[in-house]
Image (cartoon, rainbow, N blue to C red; front, side, top):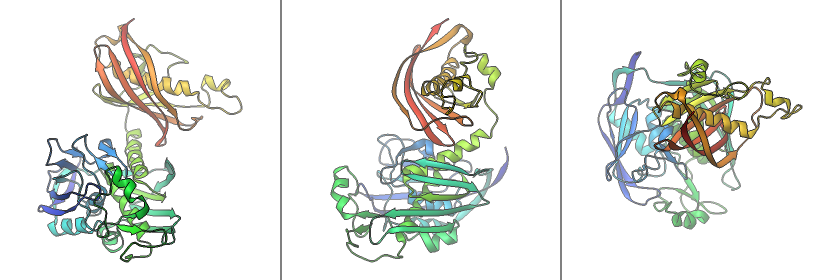
Length: 426
């Protein structure tokens, strides 16, 4: 394993205050961590293990980013992660005695200052991961979209748009460094609309939102106080993007243009960066292993390789879609589109590979899928696309199981389904 210098805190640091959504007084403690452990988050007021601050553990992106399992969630993590990211902290343990990190004044300043004061310590360990982009690509999530292009470091160009006299359309470009963050972004505060406050409180959100923790907007201006910059709104959205990109679990080298970014979209970009790296790694199982496991043959074998297998819990597979696929002859000759039923079939075959790995003598077994639920198609799949299937096991008892699968093209979700299957003897 390649080793390199990694960075963690030289001493513990504490940040206390009111939680933006819970309204509870909470204290977050930031602790040095061993090389290679990454950034972890743990609740100290409930039983539960620390979880890695990566996209796999994102629980919610509703009005902030929340990590962790049900009952031990940690919300509003993005501002602290942004501060840790720009300071180059590879390993860090975050402990908090409540359901979210303190809001401070709605910015990242309290976290940045606390971590800076604690100082940085260096140690040898596994080389930090650097996520790179080798060719331009687009990531879309709802109304947000992002263009990613190759770059030596991380540059963000962010545009937001609101029908409000103080916001309108704002754009900002920043090369992400600690100095730039401290000068241009760390003090930018979160913002919300007074008209939405009661509805958010009814949903258990924004209970700690006040003029000390949030920029409060009325239909024509501010409910109180003053802006720190005329474009404080886009600066804060840029800060949020940095924090969510930290959920990639490494450093990002890319030029990212973000239009109307959201927490859900930011996390989708972080996931895409992790998937791109997986595409450039050798397959776990190639076509010969697939042929030796699945009974399918041309033209119904729809999985080309398996990239990742985690026991009986998760599998990632690929299907390269070419113009030579036999189904394009009739679907449709002048407008080739992969039939949705075959996208689900390909996903099911990847799931079959996961199941076959859990049984003895798979050559004597076959997987029958019994039901499909929650099927959704997001966009067409056409020649030249590369389908990536990610399936996770929801339940596995005896010979029966339930799985959930999602299909992606270039990081964009194209289809999803929940399926039930049974292993039987041939």
